[in-house]
Length: 309
Image 1 (spheres, rainbow, N blue to C red):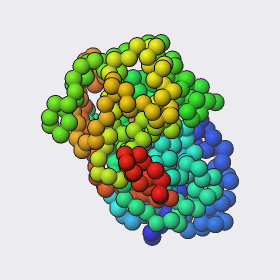
Image 2: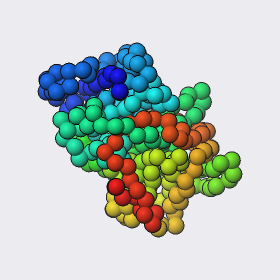
Image 3: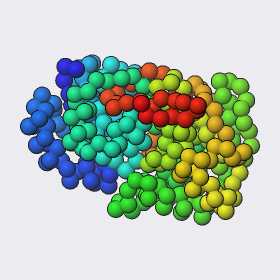
Image 4: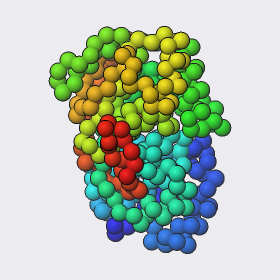
């Protein structure tokens, strides 16, 4: 690593990151004087700062999944390295990299000094847009929940924020007619609550949607939910929170490298908790070994269950 840029998103964690700005600035000045510290402005300005760094630079992002997602375009499929200080509301990427439990000073030191490893990313294509993601691409109910979570009360963070959004969306429960092709072959068709693609075991601030998913196996994991009533969805929610939901016949999971989804009516989509809008057609593909990141450890899989090494 020849240089390091530390970038803080002042809006991460409902403004919690901004309150630590001076403490972080002091810590970098004292312990990591070779690193450059900036507070992110607009997304184009932040992208320009990253693109101006050397090809082998390390970019340390202070924030959550949304912060990481917005900064992926100048990072994915390059030789730059990504370090993470998890101070966001979701932090599912940090969970997959075993960074979530670190206090910010420890996470900062680790992000600046530990070696990097290679992981996968994903990309969703719809209309004329191509958007990379690192944790998940959700389609349907989960994306509607993501929009409600983004517009939720600032004082509520993490899993409680997501659960409140989930309960509100259940009041307006919608289904879509989804047709899914996997690797070019028909996989599923019919009424569905959602069809989501995960690169990490969890989404929605730690909900273990696909507990056996790996972030470095060259594949993404599809999770499809069929028709659910409000009552059955409420019954399923505790099982989902415990990771005990995949035995339900209305749920289907499948590892893939590429899928195509047609939805009627137009299906809402979101990546890493960031709402993108609605579309009748989208494609989701894995970008294998496309990002260098600083992790503490990556999960190992035993009998279909992911555990931390």
